[in-house]
Image (cartoon, rainbow, N blue to C red; front, side):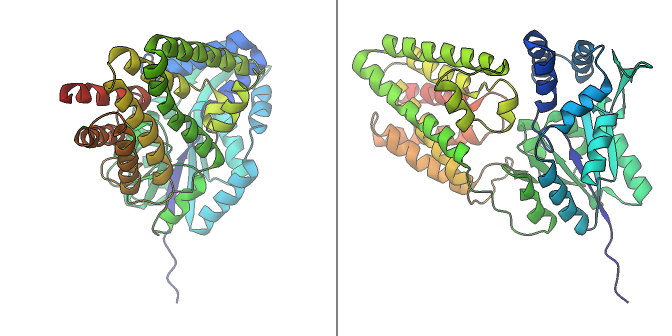
Length: 413
């Protein structure tokens, strides 16, 4: 008699994993008007920055939805793309003998259950949003276990008891810090495009398509997906920043600083216009081809951090320190991202980085900085930059890498 394979449990966070992060709130905000959209996104930003709690953030958001019918929210959610691809993805997981649970700490339970029915998930958990007899949102949020402290772990333990499983039989797929309580040492932990806290605790990090977790479930060797067209566009723009210190040396720092500032203001205006459903010529087109999927449903701040990093380095540090640091940052970081996204031996402590990516970034950072400083100084600067890029810290890389690198170079020259 054939031995029946033991069932396992896989738990997915919803936002940022099954649907683009903030996409649901972005679409609701657009429906309610620009100023409401901005307030909703600010509530989300304040939570992600740690300024307010998840509970306070959600209460503020759903107060803005007061009077809206829950059916309206469900219709907005139903228009979110990629349902068909998720259905086939979930079918592959069920074939591997997994029970599937989806858990959200931001979406109403009725919407999460609707998604679970569509995808064929076995369990669904969300937050409890109050509605009146007419089906209208009252603006109150009763909460639910998914937003309590360690609430998601309580949900997981109930599921494991119900299925007669242990944590060793469980796989967690998550992106942000609301899922930290699930990342125990016993379970298999997969960070999907994770923030730095989840990245640190992950056994595996997947960047790109969600289907990248399937080889992990099969216990096969995992390779990162080949960079997309958007990745190449973004990294080429990133590498092009090496021109700025060269221009600054030729025409002066102040004119280049004014140019970067003006370009940043134009980009900021473009993003505000995009949130209003409008676009600015050229800038909006570039953003659309360079932004990641999740960035398209919120304010894409990475280019502004990138501009701030270059601008601060130019203004604070003298030539050739600023030129070498910016060259290392722009070329080394972009090459590391491209090469690290195709193949790679995962590095410890930060499973989202690869040995191949770091080595290729180091080589190109060294070559770029050798245009401005002595080779031995370039080697140290490139090594420092790659080490900073490797560290899973909350400070944005686009600011931290050039400034830290320039500070070290300043001590050497």
